[in-house]
Image (tube, rainbow, N blue to C red; front, side):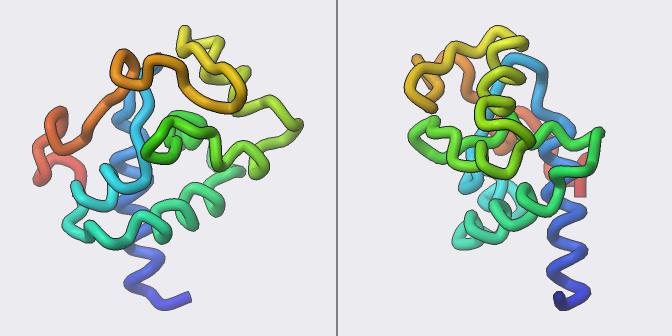
Length: 116
């Protein structure tokens, strides 16, 4: 992997660490916040690579429709859903219910210079 990709992953992790308990965001929102709007897939790769990092709450990152697309990268079939439900997030059929109620947008909540 190129060094700049690893650096990008670190920037993604810094954003994900800011997502409050009981909230979710999506890959594209993180990519836009980092100034790489077309890099949502790379954000997904970063989330996949973070599965052994206890301080990165990857379960709080879903796709733009609230689907738990990363759930297969967690131990156990339903761990991602269980972690979200433990934080009060409603999940049904592998999708966050009432996404707008739980959605956290780093572009609105964070100051760009504070995290990267």
